[in-house]
Image (cartoon, rainbow, N blue to C red):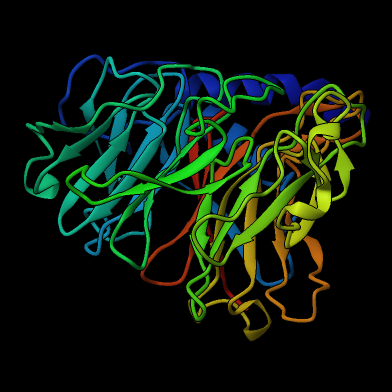
Length: 390
């Protein structure tokens, strides 16, 4: 462990400089697999070797994308990646079919936290803080993309203003609006702390679910079509309170407790006396305190062993409001009807528990056509690929 302590900061700096240290200035196609120095390869291999996966699984680097956040994948395999810090939207492709992205495009820059990306009918949708953009026929226009604004009436608050977006089974675009604070009550502005939805052209925007502090990841059950979403618990209540949440919305109009109640049964010290916790929808599963759960997906493919089929995978970005860090991992929550879902670690190692140093922070998870799992990491500026070799 002493040896790891000495080389850990060097390895982290090497890979971050190599993978995310330079910002592209032009919207031109670039080669992602450029000349890579031996030292960079060694740094990458050293970092990947610290990750712990179940037996039979392998992880590799699929692409380098600065501040890689939410992801969306086209039917032909183009991966679209949003970000929060670099204000750009990217597309990456594996054009030679070797399992690693070799082409990268900057689709837009100078945007306002373009975290969310969604793909539908050949068009790319991008969520800024207060706007939804549409890039029509994007795969035929990767070198010269243009966009139109389909909606621009969301709040401009940057506190929890970055958005995850996705199209639901009903064909509507679902867009969350986070609370503009750690803890606050805004009865005159019901748009805050909600999940909204709209038609692809931006019409008929409505609130679908409320009482949600800040969700940055949701998906739909492969059979019931219920909406499963992560929610980040409030800060400043201590190391272990409250838990973050995995919730399920089964119909429009359900309330999940914020700001009055946390974790289903913990009254807020400031607003808890205004409402009773029993009024609200309880979490499907309480998660770790302050683990910052973000992207979520059901594993619906067949590559992984059968025990993983239709289970729930969550990217935990990792804590900041805690004396000892936790999270920084991929968790698996069981898809069950018995009311007792499990909560187990699938991949960890981005956090050195002993030294409390993190070299990576998982953000989103997505499945490709082969059933492999792609994971974005905004700290290391990487997209990982997880496959099963048996």
